Length: 301
Ligand SMILES: *[C@@H]1O[C@H](CO)[C@@H](O)[C@H](O)[C@H]1NC(C)=O
Ligand SMILES: *[C@@H]1O[C@H](CO)[C@@H](O)[C@H](O)[C@H]1NC(C)=O
Image: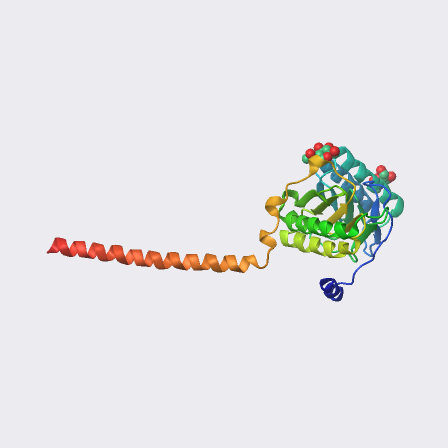
């Protein structure tokens, strides 16, 4: 609680969009933003660039889950959650393009549309390194009650902590994991996914996910929740929204690097060992030299 209060001073949190998630549709819209840009560009060229940007990103997404592109005046970026098949990824992207064409007028705009399964964004400035939105997107799901919230939220918290710590160290900045809430099966399994855009640094990925996790804590007694920022995405649910074969092994990446207490101690131990090694080698060098001198003395005698 204390840490949330402290964060409240530093960031102007949070436009909470509370709405019920009734399905796990991957094209459920979390953010739909068209920003009119006050710049002078040649409109036909701009619109043509936007079209090329879409085409190029769609092509990239048929081989990957992440795409960036640049056409005259227009930077584009798109990402699918890595658990989506290519077909589902392209379907999410296409739904986004349709949405953008419908909701943003054919004028000079930047757009940012985020869905559960993917996001699309374009603009005239390079936003590849951005990690924050004006206000983070937060959606808690209220579609049913949790049988034992007292048991549920600590487990969700544990799972989210682990996945937030592991994801910046994972290939593609993506992790998916699940956890049984109570071993006797009286409460459901929790599923969670974390992802960063691939153009940011490991430490930006970590701080972005830490922010989303802080915001998502307000959802934890609910059956599901999603928080998205410009640089990352964090979601959990008590119903599965990805296939089991998409679960990533996060165990080797939990803790370690994120433990702030361990690191200085390891540093001190490492330093001491280094010092010992130097003293030992000086000592050894002296011994060898002395032996050699004595030998030489013997020979000259
Ligand atoms: C961009 O694509 C849309 C939809 O395919 C089309 O209606 C529009 O004419 C295109 N605009 C330009 C400038 O090519
Ligand atoms: C993830 O799940 C999707 C949809 O079920 C499947 O197409 C894809 O092959 C899975 N990915 C991996 C790495 O198993």
